[in-house]
Length: 242
Ligand code: BTN
Image 1 (cartoon, rainbow, N blue to C red):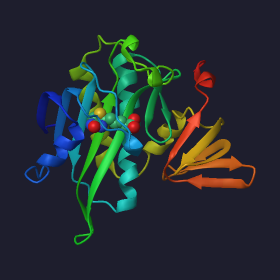
Image 2: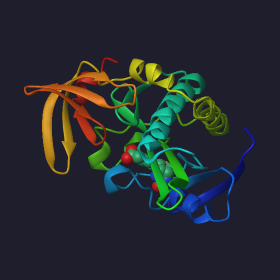
Image 3: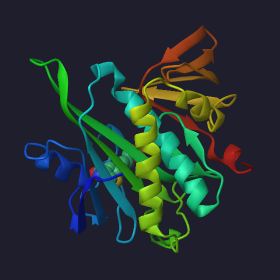
């Protein structure tokens, strides 16, 4: 895939960089950094981004309705999971919505941000940010020790990035939602007890399905509930055998 690339040693956030160039860059672009000083995660959190990891953002110009922006994240999750498996030779899982796991550890997070133009009713642009952990687990801050893990640091980063970009564009340009089948097959959530969290509220249940538009179906004591966004917690110990 021929695409303009910006290779940076250090930046606050590759997503921010992509937004800054979006005025001038009318074509898609790929931004890659070796370290982020203010990496952004979902829900306003920071993303731990020490030197040596893969911090990449794709500046995209999707012609989609606002509610379809989650599709980009879901396609990216499938593309990253496939690419890690192919290049690193380890089995990967997807935790709804967009975390990539190896065993019981999160090795990659994805954050998509869109700039919707209410006049044109289109996105001026969207930024797909992908962060892949490549570090010695000893340097993890205490709050991440239980949750986060790293891929083997000797991975060929260029090859992995190229595979991610190629796999993503295959899905992005293909139309349709055939990727949902693979998304479900890679889920480490289906059939498990989860806690759903949004805006300070929590609800317990069993994740029973993922719909064709990537919503999570949860069986609770009050019946079935369908969640379109938010975050779930899952007992990481139960993932150990994966
Ligand atoms: C999450 O797990 O909450 C999402 C993390 C997304 C991190 C990536 S790293 C590249 C891009 N730039 C950022 O500031 N965030 C995303």
